[in-house]
Length: 241
Length: 281
Image (cartoon, rainbow over all chains, first blue to last red; front, side, top):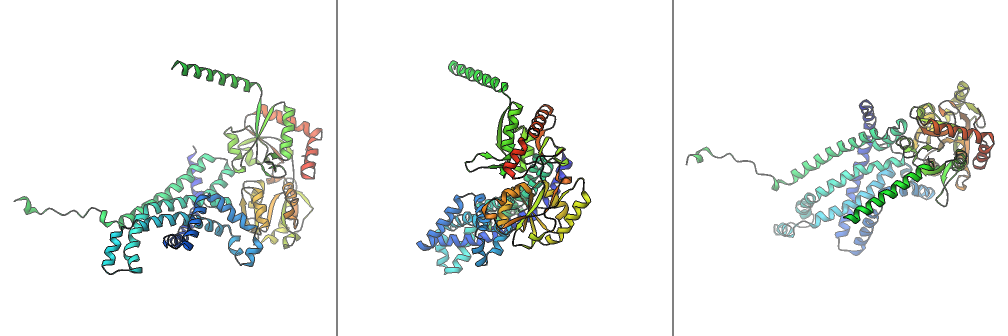
């Protein structure tokens, strides 16, 4: 184990962190919007909305992300004339947008199920209580259903975010030089796979450590009812009774 | 319990016997990439084919050993050799000083220049120097002048190369800053992106470009630019071996010399590349 080399490798690979985080957060952000839409479609009770959403989730959860990235990048590349006609080629020409697109579609499928689970776990008596207070429609959703659902879904959603940070490593196969892409390049220059991959793994570990802390903080903030109440100082005079 | 012991001993005995038998017939495991037509590629039937597959079989016959050819991704091909997953590499690998720090080479068994693959309709098709040959080692000044001559035309263009090849080294040294360099894991991947119009040119080995040009979807493409060998492009293509395996290196070297002498390499290279790539000493 050559520690001087590993320090150099660390400094090289750190250069890929902005792109890794950029891909992950773009995908999680855009994916969350799409996931919310899909979850609402599934819960609408209308078959015309429910079935397409179910089919979407089935396809994107049932196929490997690697295959999806390949299909979007190389597959759509073969339909260039059509895409150019529709004005979409500017978007699919860039490996960056192809990667964001594939990651977004993938995470939306998983996240929609997590959100649906969260929404369905809101106890009905709480909804009834809210209705008794005169809330309905958007106000009910915003004040009662949504906050409770988020709190329920957060642990699972946190895992999904971490999975996305790791999934960005697949973008390296379509020429994106994020952490894994830089690692592969460095290995091919130095032929030292073990050291470079240890460093790359360490970088992902650090990123995900920070992300899990943030998610834990949000969970704590959203769960005041589970926190221990502030300790009350025993009154001194009580001791003399 | 006794039964278990007996069976265990019997299994152990047969395993030892098999190990003994394998040691008598020497097997050399050779790795190739399987994605670098026409040097080595996976044919329609899923079998490995190409110049190096034919040559490997010929060399093994000369060396009187049994050969097993396996496919291995390019970017892990040297680390897997040093960790003894196989004994030799025949994957269009050029002999460079950088690689010699880690592994040894037998050969070379081929030497071919590089070139640029572009669309006939693009302005890059008019790049000067097409048809001229330069050696970066022995004619460095003239070769660099030829590169400088076409460099301005690449300004703002995107050039695809295979990662960790002599061509990516060439691009990093001579084209970086002028053109955007995009690195691919395989040459097939950069060919696909050239056809899709994501990149403007591919920098690769001329034999590889000739192979690509034979495909019907590349009928509107052409190879341009000066043919450059030597210097940082290495001293030809050789068999990669672990350091210190002098016996294996010698038998490969002898077999390659014999194959050059009797015209086998010329015949095979004309079969696969349409040109003679026999290295000249």
